[in-house]
Length: 563
Image 1: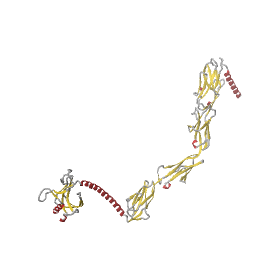
Image 2: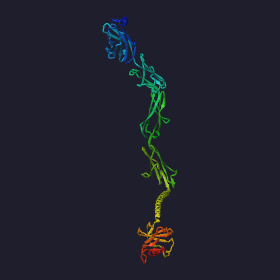
Image 3: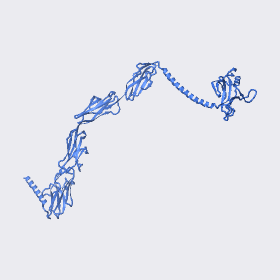
Image 4: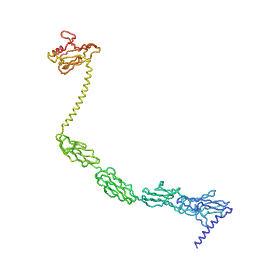
């Protein structure tokens, strides 16, 4: 019975609305309301406009328009903008061309109703409700896609709605960033060959409402391990005796849980980390880790583990297989193993405390036992001493070398002296032609029988001073005394040539004889036939003045007497 009454009520309401829509007004004009769309699909949270046009009988003035939902016959509809659920979200707009627009903001799922346009005029009975209204449907965007795909496969992601939007343009996002390099067709995103890089959170939106994105969908991609790497702790220099930990990192889906460690090609451990306590130099080398999951395996790039340590295996070798070398030097060579390599070697003789040498090799000068010390920044180690017996050590070699060195020095000094002397002799020879012997004190060095000797006779000259002849060529003497006789000089005259060039073969020193003053007078200029002569400048016995010596015999006689 209740159902029958409700059906009858609904039928009467529809009949009344239809009748009203076609009734002519009191002034002969027809009421009408036309909607542009009978049904609208709107995104949740968007703003929707329900537009249309209307007419009313002439002579009436429209005083109010608003939107209503779900009208009840016999009950005056309520303006939605005044209801608690729509306050501030609904607005009814009209213009002079009798166009209207019902604006609904921040659409919600509960807004799915039939919306009508209500007109109120200045005549109480002239009111109108436009039917059949606009059906509003509300939808949300939703990404439909597989949860997980395997690398290398294809995948399609679809942006789904519960109703059909009007001419939508779909926009796809991955991890919040728009996708521009992928294939988008209608509401579908196509991934041709899936890779691990395609894993992420995908969402979609519609152009014009980009802020109304769908809930993000996570796409997982299964793939074998990649980006496998090894890190060393502690970082920096690794010193022998410390503890070192190697850690393997990788990227894989599902996550890697199987790790195998290799030194070179030999397996040395399992697990994500590999520790080496009390590390030794033998642990140096290249290490890799291999990661494995359900889809494959991959090995990391090798890392070089370098262990630094103090010198070890220090030993001394001899340049000969015997320990005794006669006549030659012995060379000792120090060898060691260290990291960094040893560069500081110090040599010691057993029984002594002070070093006897340094360097990679050493040549001992004495017999004895010798050893070397090898040192780097991490420590030092001594070698076992070796005995060396040196017999007949070649001191002659040292002497020879020293002699040669001294000889070279002496020859150098002599060469310098000869060069300088030669220059002086040349300078003296240049002056010899113009030299005048101005004063001679002499004595004889021979017996009376030597008065008439030849050019090989020995004469003694006590003092010789020189002056140049006058440039006017006159046969005059200008004696200039330049020195004082301290000792006699014995000169052996080897030969006197026609050019008056005297060559002296030897010189010996004696006490001075009583002075005898001589002048050698040069001929006047242009008189080349005259030879220079010796003149006695002090008075002769029995008279004064200048008297020439005509021969050397007189001179030698005087020298003999006054010896």
